Amino acid sequence: MKDKKILVSGASIAGPTLAYWLDRYGFEVTVIERAAVLRLGGQNIDVKGPAKEIALKMGILEEIRAHNTTEIGLRFVSSDNHTIAEFPSDSSMSMTQELEILRGDLVKILYDLTAKRVEYIFGDHIIDLIESENEVKVDFASGKKGVFDIVVIAEGIGSATRDLAFGGRPRFNYLGLYTAYLTILRNNSDSRWARWYNAPKGIVFMLRPDNYGKTRASVTFLAKENAYKDLSEADQKRALIDRIQGAGWESERLVNEIKESEDLYFERVSQVKTDKWTKGRVVITGDAAWCATPIAGKGTDLALAGAYILAGELYRAGNYEEAFRNYEKIMKPYVQECQKLPPGIPRIVYPESRVGVALLNQLIAIVGSKPVKWLMRVFSGDKKDNKKNRKKEIILPDYE
Image (cartoon, rainbow, N blue to C red; front, side):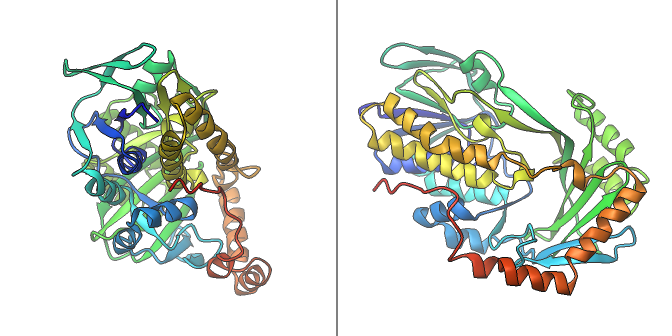
């Protein structure tokens, strides 16, 4: 393709992955990131399916493995920290995957892989896009200007650049939940098991080990869509503390940690529903285009697959219009499948009454019992047994 100069906005996971493949195919790539430095925070993510396949192609699979969070499985616990049921990482019922890595560690791996060959600009962002027949003129907040053949927006769910380029916000499918993430100090109750606790009033607490001697905590709960909208960080902390105080288990520990937290993330859980991913020479990818939410467990798969396919189609196609059409044709069915949630999810796992919590815990105990686990292995097989027979979620073209 003749259009070789590409600007990528966003240096999280999708952006650097895209930059790697574009550079490999001979494009001239610039990555711009609003934050002053790499944003290395975040919780556990897993690298599986298409993400694992792409990581292998990129030569970073063993480096990802070396940064494993050390998590060995999932335990559902009661208010007195008694284990209701446990699912090791090789169980089909466990959320723990073979390759668990912190979001920030994966971002750093991708950045280090590309930084010597791709231009990165931090602490700046796009404020205007003026497209002509042959190029896109870009104005930056710093006052600088640039001219590019194509602009790719690889930002998060709240992407301002996407809204600027497409003339408004996409549709958001709110799932009835707010979630908060933070890093806390490890204590004696923490281990290599992730722990899940359901509290009344539709609250789920989760504590997970990391590979830096700390614990990654999350609090997710039922709430109306605008209940905590546009709060300052101080107000977020107060609102979160009010919501969980007295909820039992390790809620008081989390109250104290929230007060001192320097990396708190607190936001609605919403999917992005966009009618189109392209406008002229501008295209979106990653969460800005299709956020499936952490509940789907497909964020990393979608980010790497979208970046790989977009870069490959730009390399293979005769022009950007053809490349964009092919990119949407391949990715949209996969995105739609990833955004589907089982009936009753997520509300069914967020009971509001004590009776509801007790019933859910009883069900989990039954599913986690030895006889039921044995039956599940017989009829569905564990993760290792299923690897050879598992149908691929998406067929990744071989662009080379």
